[in-house]
Structures are given as structure tokens and as C-alpha cells.
Length: 521
Ligand code: HEM
Image (tube, rainbow, N blue to C red; front, side, top):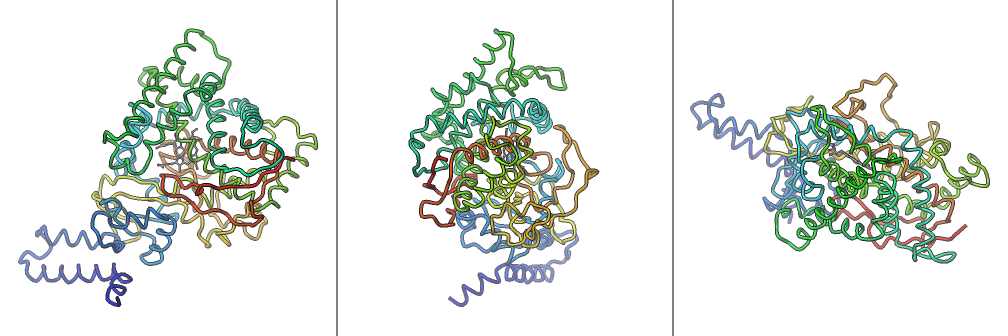
């Protein structure tokens, strides 16, 4: 036991020592010393690789401990090995670099060094369809992101807020889970439905939204099954869920393409939705976006936003149920800022509700839906300020959530306290100073801040940064404001506890059932 324990705790030091002994011996034996002997050079390379997390089995490596609770895995191994370490994920050497410098290194890596599509295409292409996102060169993705981003104008958001608010109100009128004056509900299920209804209606128009009451909801559910982590390995297999995924992809794409044809035939649209915008966009090379690409981008947009926004809104409701004081403060904020009669919500109103905004920020700090961002390494990458070089046989993993719960940046980091985002709060984040003239860069989809070295990056950074951030904020703020108007929430047992996180899918979401008690105002 003692030997095993000792080996475990000192594993990387032991590994280095063994490597060193081996290296020395090979130098003694090797007449060429390290200059021209491939074996010497290989050992030298190994010595420059980050420390490896101890594991018993070469293929499984740390896959299970990582998969059960990634944030805990990062925290524990950071304490043992420092900010950079390597672990084995499904047989692949995976180098984690946490902290702001790590976020910068990975998320702002150069195109010649890091690559996202090589990792994600096996999951995303069967789900989204061909020729979009990770099934095309990065330069084409940048153009596609630009098309999506420029469709999300202030004018578009002004039209979205009433659509989202009405969807929420109608949902609570219709849903059997909210019949009567009070009850208990498994909130993630409701939030998933509200997210897809509000996103499809605002981003894709009323025709598509109406189809969610008929066939689209089930089809999207089947499509979603393609996103399970096991499909990183089994995406190709003729398994029942993959067959359903492929059928759903074809059927949904056809629904979108038929809708595009109908719109073209009608020749008009008064809508601000993205589908209309994409139908009328042209690539730099003069080619108009083909209908199948518009359809596949529609699927990608809805899927990209669905998990992240629906898990965030579920966490918000769970947090509010654990802190009825904040829930009531939100209600008072609306009454004071908008008037006691609470008039229909507008886009402009959202800016008058700072606590409502802080709820989203604070929830994303502790419950960022994407806990790990992966990149393939395309050329050996020296890590600035260290002796380490990450070789091409590794993949890189950024975990921005680690710094978002680091006490060096966020006092009492485990406390969910939205008021910490007030400048004068004693819990205010200690973030690096930013200014309006902070350097910006355009990767091809509009200007974004150049630096990724912030401890708070729930929407990522660099060329793959989220283009849905503003939409997600508008959607989430509107949903929260409408729920607060309609209900009082609390935990079923009246406690301040919050349920644990389910990491079994690719996104961090609440374990289910996640029941809360609701009562109409
Ligand atoms: C990318 C987070 C909502 C569309 C990303 C990335 C993150 C993220 C961390 C970077 C991924 C990477 O670097 O590999 C979130 C969060 C959301 C949210 C926390 C909500 C709370 C949305 C919504 C949409 C969207 C609503 C669509 C309307 C996208 C797209 C990308 C992206 C198109 C680009 C992928 C790439 O360039 O590789 N998001 N997202 N997201 N997100 Fe979001």
C-alpha cells in the first residue's frame, strides 16, 4: 500500500527520475551522445513534455476520473503538477494548461499550431450536415460566423425580446407542469423546451417555430443523441442512435430547405431572423450561400445555443430557488425601473436591470456549460516562460472555468453572489484592467478583444469565440425577467442547497430530477 501510495503521489517526479536515469544510461552507452542519435533526441523531447498524470492503464488513462468531475480533476492535478500537465483521454495524450496564460496559449493559438475541426468534425458533421462549421476550411467557417454575427443587430434584438417574452408567457399558460397556483417541477425539462421555442422563433422565424409543435421537437431530440461523448469514437458505427441521428439530420435539413424555397417563392419577408439573412448572403468569392448550407447552419445555430443556454437558464432557476432573497430583489428591480404595472418588456428595458444582467454573469462563472475546449496540435508548441514543448502527438485542452473559480480573481469563489459584479462589492472580481482602446483583432467574423488572458471567458476567445453571446444574453435576460414576473421560487425543502452537476454529456448541466417549488404571484 505504502509503495503504491508513494508512487501515486510522486508519480511525475518518479517518471522524470526514471526517464533521467534511462537517458543518462543511454548517453553512457551511445557513442554519438545526444547530437545525432535519434534515441537520445527522443528522450530529450520527452523531458521537455509537461508532467503526466499518473494512471494504471495506457488506453483508459485518466478518462474515468476526468469524466466523472472535470473541474475537480483539473483542480486536484493543478495542485499536484502546476498549471500545465498531460493526462490520457481515451488513449490520447491531452495537455491541459489552466489559468489566464493557458487560455491565451490555447484559445489564441495560431492556425498553423492549433486546430479545432480535426477534433470536433466527427461529432458535428453528422449532426449539422456537410460544408459548414467544422466540415470546411477555417476561412469558410470565419465567413459563416460573420454572416451569423452581422444578422444579430440591435434592430434584430429589438424584435426578438417581445417574441421571447410571449413565448415564455404562453409556455406557462400551456404547460401541464405549471397548472394551478403552485407546484413542483423538474426545471431543466421546462427550460430546455422554453429555450428551443424562443430560439427557433426569434432566430429562424414563425414557420420553423410552429413545426416544433409537430415533428421538429422529436427530430431534434434524435439529432442530439449524436452529441454523446461516446461518439468521439463510435460516430461511424451502425448503432440505433446513429441511424436515428442520420435520419433526423436529413429530415430536418429538408424541412429548412423546403421553407427556404417557400420563402423565395413568396418573395417577401418582414422578419429579422437569421435564415432570411443567410438566404441573401454571398461568400467573398461571389458564390451565394447554397440552400443546403443555409439549412445546415440553421441546425448548427440551434444546436450550439440549445445546450449552453438551456443549461444556463436551468442553473439560474435552481440558484434563484436557493436564494429567494435575490429572486425578490429581481422583482423589486423591475418594479422600480419599469413601473409597478410591469409593462410589456422591451430590449431597451433590459439595460435598466443590472441585477438581472449580473444573474447571468454570475451563473456562467460557476456553471459555464462548456468545461473543456479541445484543439489538435499541428506543430510543436513551446510554452512561453517554461521548458515545456507540446508535441504534435498531443491535443490541448483549455478549461477557462478553472480561473473563474480561483480565489486569486474571485473572492469566496464558490459563493454564488450576483451582487459581486457591482464595482463596490467587497467580493468584486479582481480582473486585469481593460480599456476601450484594448487591442482588437478580426479573425474574419468581426472585431474581438485580442487578449484571451482573462480569468473569465465563458464564451471562449480567439477565432472560435462564441458569436451567440449577445443573443444568449438577450434570451436569458428576457426569460429570467418573465419568470420573475410570474412566479416566486424556492427549494422544495426550503433549504439553500443546489443540486450537483451532470458531466455525462459534453456540457455541464444539473443532475436530474432537479425539482423546485413554484408559486404564482
Ligand atoms: C462558440 C459558449 C450560446 C453559437 C462558443 C465557444 C464557447 C461558447 C465557450 C467556444 C468554443 C471553442 O472555442 O471551441 C457559449 C455559451 C452560451 C452560448 C456559454 C450561452 C450561455 C450560443 C448561442 C449560439 C452560439 C445562443 C447561437 C446563436 C456559437 C458558435 C460558435 C460558438 C457559432 C463558434 C464555434 C467555432 O468557431 O468553432 N460558444 N455559447 N452559442 N458558439 Fe456559443
